[in-house]
Image 1 (spheres, helix red, strand yellow):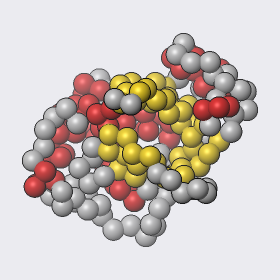
Image 2: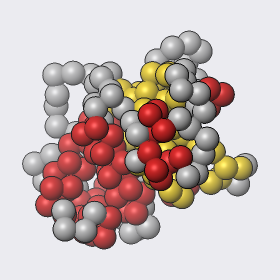
Image 3: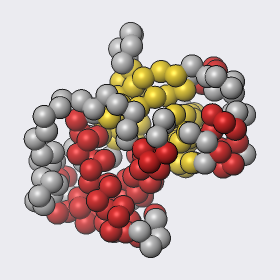
Image 4: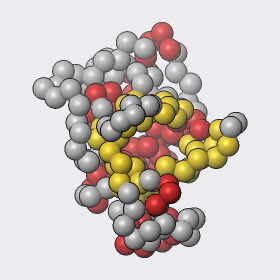
Length: 183
């Protein structure tokens, strides 16, 4: 295991796709990904736009916590408001991650000023297609969330021996859950 507690086999799986996902930035993104993965195991506070209001200039923003599983193959979304029902997305089901107003507005009817602060995740399941629209107050958090999700999605195509990776535990932190909107 590395200093972050991540088994070498998982580290290799993710490192293998860093350069492909973000050309010329492999070392920067690797550090960002390991931070994201550790925080994701504890819980990352995010804001999802309510799909019913997503095309408005002032859509409804709903706070959620994103949790990553120990194999880095699924993310679970827990609403911070009632009713507390979770939704799990296998990273393999993610077909696209979009960031930037022009890319997002070309795919959906979303106000340009709102879209510039969003990451849109398209999901394809046997039961149908879904679109998650994450909103970020800080551009740095938006960029990190999009880049890390792209790399983790690509990494699930690299098989891992589950017996070696199931024991990953993040390094101890003082906070149980990061409920801020900093991904």
